[in-house]
Amino acid sequence: MLQQQLTTLLAQTDIALTEKQQQQLVKYVELLNKWNKAYNLTSVRLPEEMMIKHIMDSLVVAPHLPGHHYIDVGTGPGLPGIVLAIALPDTQFVLLDSLGKRVRFLMQVKHELGLNNVTPVQSRVEEYQPSVKLDGVLSRAFASLQDMVDWCSHLIDHSGKFIALKGVFPSEELESLPQGVKFEEKISLAVPELDAQRHLIILSKD
Image 1 (tube, rainbow, N blue to C red):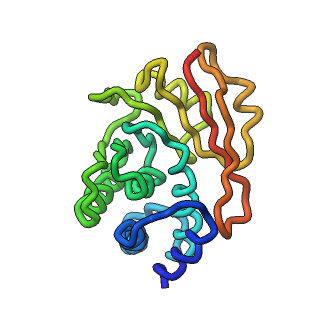
Image 2 (cartoon, rainbow, N blue to C red):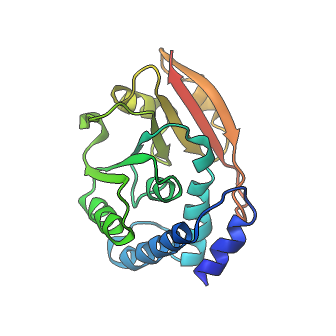
């Protein structure tokens, strides 16, 4: 059922995935559904809804990530990091979360899906120091743009980007950006079968 649903959803996008990548996404939803019962990882309870609200919602970001090293801050159960790591196997993702149960889940996902390009880390974002130069900081439903910039500024240099996955265009948040940060671009995203606005907001250091 989930495999068929994923095939139908992908057909409504320009995203091409191998059979192996599709199987990994289906397995991820199955693991998320299984662990969710005990760990309460997401408020979305039905696997069919997870496929739209989590998998496709994260997957549509993949074409907009040109770099090779990203950190997903406040990743929760791996959203968007795990999904993007499956879609972009040549790109490395640090998945950062402060809650041990989420990081344990991410370690299990990494093991079961054979994902060599993800590094789950339990840490507060303010305390984490990356070991490589990052192309960007990703955040989905993690914080306001201002908080994201305040907490994550030490993670990137002037060539790195702040990449926020947002719903409705956050015009008020953009008006109150701190000094030294500039708004670069907004990208409207279309998520198949999701009746809601989605925007990718890209910021950089001034």
